[in-house]
Image (cartoon, rainbow, N blue to C red; front, side, top):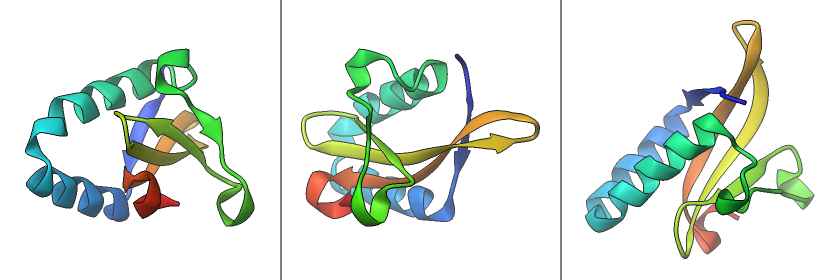
Length: 93
């Protein structure tokens, strides 16, 4: 199910910082965002529900140790994915 991606300022900041520090990972991140938009729960993304203080969110993998934190929400009358954070496992959890 295709969903619109909604970028938060926090995600934009994380993405700019990540791109500056790790430019070779950009193609993987862009491909992951396209896959996330097409189907957030396809097995290749290893999407999983978070627990604890992040229990309202989901996470997916954008590479070996790169994670994207997001939530599924209603936006303009249809389901959308709001992106919150991008970084290593330790950065985002």
